[in-house]
Amino acid sequence: MFITALVSGSILHWLAVDALGSAVRSDLIRTASAASTVIDGDLHRQFTSPDQESSELYKKAIQPLERIRKAAVDLRFIYTCWPWFTLPAASSVEERLFDSSGTDARAA
Image 1 (cartoon, rainbow, N blue to C red):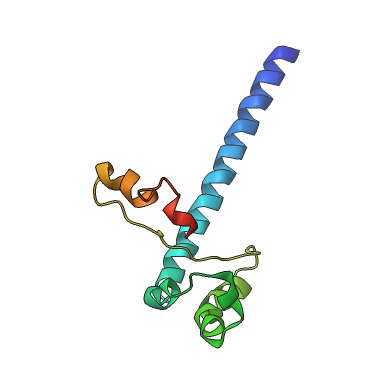
Image 2: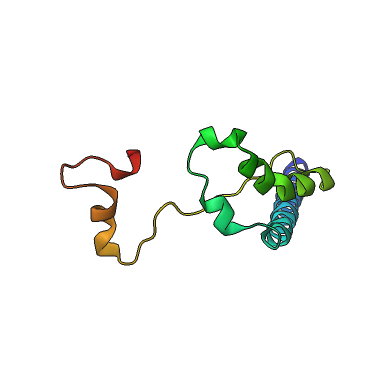
């Protein structure tokens, strides 16, 4: 009897955790989709240094994100990001990440 209750409880717990994870993921995807309609990607691409966080341009750029964050009571943070490099072909990855001296090009 105890084993049956333990197995049943474990299965129910696993199903509940899975359902909660799916709900959170779905909400995040919905929020990200909505946010993508008000974000100026070209403007955000200009921000390459944390020093720019105090600029007026940066403050203007994050206003839509701040409105979304305040409207969504379950969000504490909201971020944007973009790929800092593209990979046109797998064979060129090594060339793009490291210069001829072997130094990591991303550190530049």
